[in-house]
Each structure stands twice: as C-alpha cells, then as structure tokens.
Image 1 (cartoon, rainbow, N blue to C red):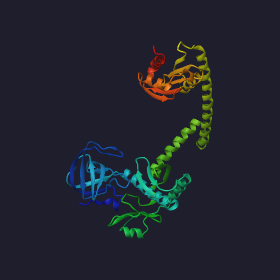
Image 2: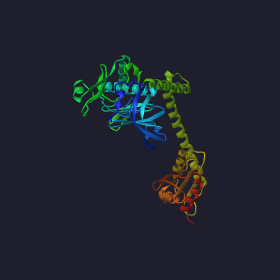
Image 3: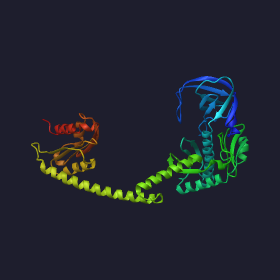
Image 4: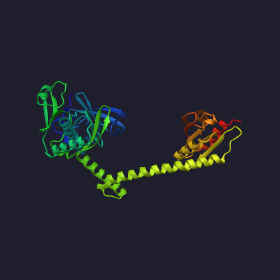
Length: 410
C-alpha cells in the first residue's frame, strides 16, 4: 500500500494521526546511519500516512515518536515509508510526533542549499552535482571552474539577499514536461506527477524534501570554505541556527588566538603572520647552530678514536637528549674523515644512522639490513650512508653492539 506523505504539502505539521498497518520485528540492528549505530532491537512499522521524512536526496530522516515508541530511522522503500521504532506498537490509530527542532534545522539547511545552488548556477555557471546535509556542516559539490574566495563571498552575499527578501517558498506539482516549460533548473526523466520547490523569483527545482515557507526562515547562510573533490569542488556551508553557532565558535577561536598573540581580534592575522615569520627565522638559526655544534662534536670524536687493527676508525655512539637532526649531521661530518665509520642511535625516537668515508670500503646499506635482522626495525640507504628506525627505541644500545659486531666479526 502506498504511504501518503503528509510532509509533501505541509512540512510544518508537527503532529498527525495515522493508521498502523503493520508492526514487524526488524531484529538486532546491524546497520549504521551517518549519525551513529542504531539501538538494539527494532520494529518495522508501516502507516497509511506519515509526516516523517525518510532519508533521501542528501537530507537525513526525521526522528520523533509513534505513541510511546521512539522513531530512530525512516526508510523510503519505493512507495512505502518504513518507520524503525525501538518498541512494538499496536495495530490501529496512532499519534505521531515529529522532533521539531531537528525537522526545522533540516528545513533551514535544505532550503538554504536550494538558494545557494541557484546562485552558484545562475551567477557563476557552477551547477550543483550533489548535496549532503551533515550533522554539523552541509556540503554541495559544484562542477566547473574553481570557486575562489571572491566567488564564495559574492555567492554568499547574493544568497543572503534572497534570505533577507523573505521570498515565498512554494510547492508545485506537474509532469516533467510541464515543469520543464515552467523553467525547472534540473530536468528529470521520471514519468507521472512530480513535485518541485519554487523559490519566488529565483528558481524551480524538482525535490521531495522538506522546506521552510519563506526564505527569511532560513535565518542566514554562512559559506565556510571549498576543497577539491576529484573533478568537482566541495563547498561547505551552514544555515540558520547552525550558522549562528558556528559564527560564535569561530569568533571565540579568533579571540583566544588574539589573546595568545597579545593583540586585538582584528590584528590576529597580521600578528600570526609576524609570529610565523619569526618562528621560521628562529628555526633556521637554530638549525644552523645545531649543525655547527654537531660538526664540531663529530670532529672532536674523530680525534679521540684511533684506527683499529682492521684499519677502521669506528664511532659507535648513543644519543639521548640531542635531536635526530643533530645526530644525522654528526654522522655525516664524522664520515668526512678517511677510514671512518659512524654507527649512531637516538634513544628517544629510535632513529639510527650509519655512515662511512668511501675509504672504509664497507656497505652501510648492507650493514643496516644485517643488523636489523636481529633488532626489529626498518630502513635503507646507499653504500656510504643509510638510516632507519627501531621498532623499540629501548633496544638502541643493543643495535650499536650488533652493528659493531657485524663490522668487526670475531
């Protein structure tokens, strides 16, 4: 039996009465919806008519109550609407109640999307390919040139002008041919009577979703940003109370950043740029200092260690507090001296470095590979230099002993 969809003509109906046609066990819920796992045992309820909107067209389902049962999901199965509830209900007349806060939020987002999509299409030749109404943010994927910041700003301004104009949002019915003749933005191939949403003096768009009655009820439209998604562009936005909440959160974040930078919110960007520049300068100076110190320490270490009977000068050293960059520079500088091999390990990160002067005539990549067979880790490199990382940094000293034994087998 076809379920009569009350929300088609009256999306503001919060309560309704319907005949329960069937109530069957769904079993333990194994499916998940985008908002999280569904609870325990569920029942499938069919009604002769319903105001509950099912998940469809990028818009999530309504929630609410049927009698004493909570409606946790609503499914669109061809001509029938299935209500998943958390307890069985009796056959007969039943009162349904929509979670109005959720419904109104979804209507604000969906109508706001229609306005924003119409503006992108008509003003910037960027048609909407898909729409997703998320828990916190909404997105539309548009196709065409990149919508740079100036386009996003302009689209948001025009869209909000439509909101402030408080235009009528009307429901229209007709065949595909009739809607096409009326100037529908997106043509459809379906036969029979189709439903469309008309925003006065803006657009006519086929849609089965729930919408506000006037654009002023959208509240406001806030465009948050854009990112590349394959061949399209994903625009993030929020409407109404969501936009208000996000704007408050954004300003709270800006104010906190400004406090840390010891400036006003209006000066935060300039202060942040200055802080980044100073940090980069300090980093370059610090890196240069570390390199100079590592080079001096490496040369001192070379002077302290004599060449062994095998003709090698082996520097096997464990580092605790120094940075991995320091250790790497130390290894590179030590290997500048003839017949020298450096085998170094950093205990905090588990990073290991092996380097040689070509006159040592060993193979550092082979040395690393052979040593890591006995101490778990991974890495690689060339004949004269290789690096890796131990699975367990606590075995750094063990690695040095094994590597020295590989170099100087007894």
